[in-house]
Length: 392
Ligand code: ADP
Ligand code: MG
Picture 1 (spheres, rainbow, N blue to C red):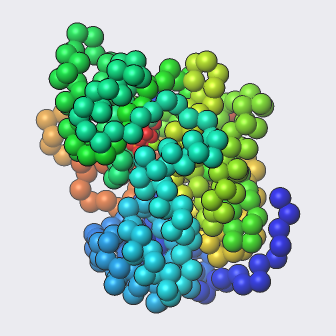
Picture 2: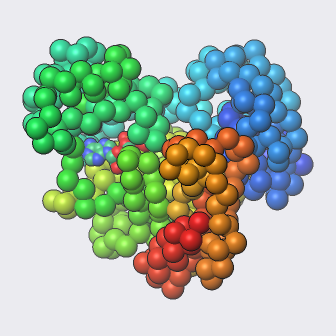
Picture 3: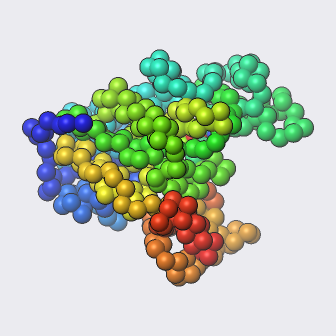
């Protein structure tokens, strides 16, 4: 992991552009500000979370290539926190500033079918899946894969949206379930995946700079509820051989793409002991929010370093840290009326911190913030953050 000194680092004082002003853009902007950069973002929502911590916000859609070019004109480098940015916008921006990560990786990961085909073609381990384009193909795929499946739209899904599950409810009518899944994935191209027996879910974050320096974080262990990340802790408790396998997978994927930036590789550890790739996200990732406290260098600072072609930061672990997501549900009573979370009670738990994204409208399932907690072991960190969450 030696590195050449970058001939052309983008130094503090320069301006970083970010496609997307959600919480990931906001936390990246906060890290960049701390290092003395200026930040411009592009987002369709003028009240996006990054709005309050950046120098300027261009209000535009992801496919507005004219405004993408305008963003890049005012910036020394452009990065992203969302995957939906159109390739035409990426290209328009690239005429004025380096865009990192670039279009090649985006073109592959924007489409779940392309992404899986790319992973398979390059020899990375994956669960069984079929690409489908019609209800008939979906039905056949479910039959071939053995009944219990996740059906996912090719584009635009996140936090389990654009997905339907089949074969999980006993007594359910298979034809009805197939139709429901086809509807859930938007009646368009998608993938059907065999439902795997999971021992655990992990993710591995890898950073790679334009000069080719690579750093891989220790894995995070991720617990999902209703297909949304509920809590995550790092480092993940893994055997040495599994940890090595996971880091090598992430590093090889980043090298194959010649990544410039950071990439989260979501992985499944199956009950049979296999390690399989689930999906890729070339941006900051919810499962590495704990890196702000667990690691010498947070994922957000690492992204800034990577896209500015600075030396990458140390990824060693300072202390085990866990995060628990705060969804809009926490701000709502059972009947949908608003409630005030008891932040004072949660913050009384030793070592717990609160991170809110300044989203003003809580909705069920919407990520509004997270709590973080630390401990002598990963288990203790999880226990602390869950105790705080219960007190809310
Ligand atoms: P998203 O883009 O919404 O994160 P994912 O493909 O990561 O979509 O699915 C969300 C979650 O659903 C996963 O983290 C996992 O908990 C569960 N899941 C998805 N696919 C499978 C599968 N094939 N087998 C078992 N669980 C799955
Ligand atoms: Mg996922």
